[in-house]
Picture 1 (spheres, rainbow, N blue to C red):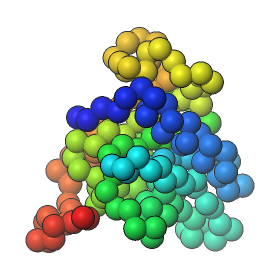
Picture 2 (cartoon, rainbow, N blue to C red):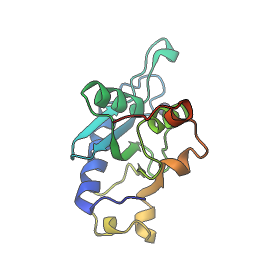
Picture 3 (cartoon, rainbow, N blue to C red):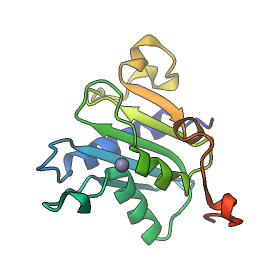
Picture 4 (tube, helix red, strand yellow):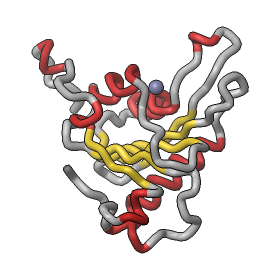
Length: 161
Ligand SMILES: [Zn+2]
């Protein structure tokens, strides 16, 4: 699984928290932010956007992907997802896992972030294996999140370029 440098990861995590703050979630009150990093260092973010017609709402992860793709970016090297939950357990829903899978290689890391992420870049960010780090950030790969998945290759399509 690829790893970001600590400053890159810190920036991506903070972006997800900023987008979380913009969530429009008056119904669930469950605010989520997502941030995608492109190979050339750009960050595209999104928040969940709910609707009085509940089914019309969209998750943060899909908002971020739709924003990026419509701006001409469709390859991502890392994703961060955050919410207001203190434990780093907010992971993409099933629909979003499938949606992300279209644009993420199997090894791309997806970071689940605690709402209590420190305001200064923490020293443990270089290695997320330590006990303290596990209170704030959990890293999984796209493949781990959605094993045996169905994607463009199953339809003979090369996928995003
Ligand atoms: Zn979702």
